[in-house]
Each structure stands twice: as C-alpha cells, then as structure tokens.
Amino acid sequence: MTRRRLGCARSIVAMLLASAVGSAGAGRAADLALPERRVFPEGGGGSPSTLERPLAELWPGGRRPGAAALSIAVHKARRRLDLLVNGRIVKSYIVNLGLAPEGDKARQGDYRTPEGDLFVCARNARSQFTRFLALAYPSPEHAHRAVSSRRARPSLERTVREAYRRRDRCPPQVTGLGGAVGIHGSGAWTRGPGGYRLADWTWGCIGLRDADILELFENVRVGTPVRILPD
Image 1: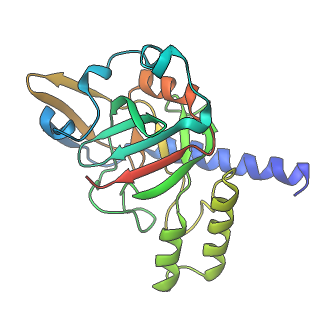
Image 2: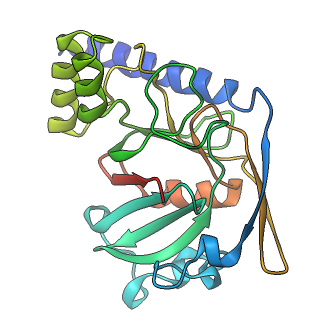
C-alpha cells in the first residue's frame, strides 16, 4: 500500500471511530445495582482495592512492563475490566456496556457489546469521549458465523483474517455486523454500602470513567489482546 493510500485508510478509520463515539449514549440507559460479590466474586480474581489506586503503584516490581506483556479481560456480567501483566491481574476497572448488554454482538444496531478474543486495532487521542481504543470487531469467528448464515460475503472473512494475522490494523468497519466498537471514556459509577451503581448507555462500546481511560490509553498499544467474556 502506498503512503498516500495508507494515510487515507487511517483517516477513514479515525472518522469512523469519531462518529461511533459521538453517537454513543443514545437511547435509554439501564440502571443497575451490583453487589460487590458479583463484581468481585470469590476466586474470580481482581480486587476492589485496586479501583482507585494509580496503576503506577501496582506494576509488578514497581516498573511498567513492556507492551507485549499486557492484556485485557472484560467480564460483562460483572461489569469489570481487568488489566493483566503476563496473565496476572494488576488492576480492575468498573465499566458501562451497551444498551443491550447480554449476548454477543451480531449485527449493526443491536446495541450489544461483542464477546470473544479481539485486540486493540487503533488508538484515538482526540475522541469526543476523552480517548478511544478501537477493538478489532468483527473477529474471524464473528465473520465466519455471518458468512455461514449468508449474512456476509466470504471476502469479508478473508479480510478479517488478514487483519488478525497482521494485528496492526482494524478489520472492515462498515459492514452489516456493525463496527467501530471500542473502549472509551465518560463512563460513570458510584460505590455505596455493599456494591456499585451504574448504567449501561453505549451503543456496544465499553465505557470507562475519564480518569480510567486516560490511564489505560497511556499504557495500551495497538495489538494488545482483549478477551471479552459473558460472565
């Protein structure tokens, strides 16, 4: 790809991310009250004690690891995002999800947050919602299911698999499966006796408080693995 074409491709992706974040929050938010034992179940890893601590205080050995050591896990039912170093949780964050949080994303406009093994495929420091870490949705699994059910052409699956092989770009974002899904800011939650109160309000993205996305954005790079689980 020539430098000019590469620049155009990046501009198109940036435009899509900006428009997606700008449209987040339409519709009716669902208010939730989650007991702490649901967000941090016994034996489920993570600790509420890390929620308000600066990440710089939590790095193993007191030093920030290389980007290749980092990964992200999102537990949808727990409304929790974990940052891991070499597979071990170092900090947890409370998140807001899409307006239809249950189930895997399958099509444009279903308001669902996707599930499965994804990766960070782009970063937007000028997002309307503070910062934006784009996720590589659709994944090969999403594309394969769509092709198998004749909701997408085989060429989509091939292009998605190439993006996953390279891990330095986003898969196609304008498809019937939806796109421009990511992790961004302007989320909110409060902590009370025994639990947390929050609302799901995005169009399928993962919302963090602004301070949290600033912290995460500073450390996460393109290619960082992101596993989104239904639990």
